[in-house]
Length: 112
Length: 113
Image (tube, rainbow over all chains, first blue to last red; front, side, top):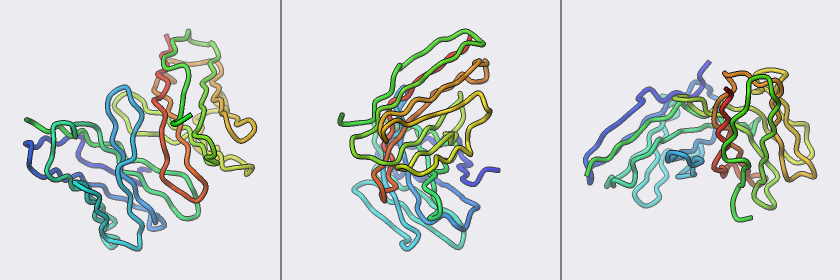
């Protein structure tokens, strides 16, 4: 039972363009969402988060959008840079639990 | 330390042997998580510790897996009678109480041969 789904295993974009990574969830009790980036042989690093009381959170080149009615969130990276090439995981948490549930990840390749 | 530290970084073991994986969380963080990532898969939740509360063990895949956290700091994940399907990267993370941003260590790559 996958509560957090990242349906695109990979994405390739040109440097300078926008990267859009998508994530869907099924548990309506989730109230906090996070995006992590992972390079090979390293642990995931936190990128950006959003609470369910908001629909947008921005931090530099990274913006996360939350559509609660559609149970969908997305991460926008603009402009994309070759150093952004990594695997991106979305994660969600329900207020009743500190457990973070992760999606399966999307591998982003930014072409120079 | 400044970040979450895991040891060893790599472990190769023979099928049937026991292994212990160690995690040193960020100082002062009361929450500690163990996850694993099998080849080509996402992060699978294993166990969660929060302060002195009973741990959430709901993700442990079998009774061969156990974890403890001594003194509210260092944690050890033990896998008994290892099997080839246990081969994965085991990741530890910690977070401050009330703060759901979790910081990960670099992981331990376990290979069971």
